[in-house]
Image 1: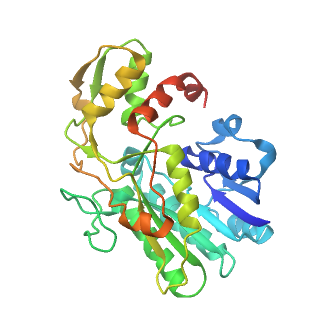
Image 2: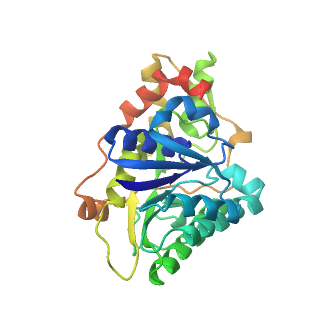
Length: 314
């Protein structure tokens, strides 16, 4: 059986990836997580299906020890600080986790193992149309984007040095059940669940490419299995190729909740820097995997509303 490591395996996308891999039952699963933000999701994953290694990826020696014990064939590196306000308020820690932690993982990965790195659409410069791998300008707008951009460079370096078989996945906006960071959809759901039909939001102009968490986990697996062997790592967006505005998300959640709502802009929630558009080109994803995400946004929002009580516990 293949040995698979999932860092951040108790995170939002990570726990769904663990759940899907466990359901297949054809690999030995190991989760590396420091339980800083994912410990509450232990009840949401099949505990008998994997071995948990409580390790902080900032700790080089602890990472090396765990990886030497496991000797994985595949690493899905999802552990990161990805909530942008947290990155902006503590950039040193964001760099320590997202960059130095990635280097620690790369350095400890067995020679020739596949290393699937969770990057982000935030590495792209703003533009009005779909972002295309290798063509669209790469120029992050925030600390989070820069940490992932630098993480990508280290994946390239280790791949080109013959150390690992690299895959870089630029993930777009993940939605659905299980999210606990106060991104757009969870923030709306929390307000509605508290009985407040006056939904307070920050910037209302952005359009985003929303991918369901289940599709995101499936996409990581499919890209992790994509043929490589080239001089450069596999590089692919992971999104739907469709963008929706903030108002669309609000309306879909309101429909799922059967609540009449009113949108109010809250100055305290407005980001000083916010890109107007994020949309993935999915051409490369299709060519590499023969697959595209299938879950529509209305279903994602219905799932998120239906599981809100469970999400609060998680």
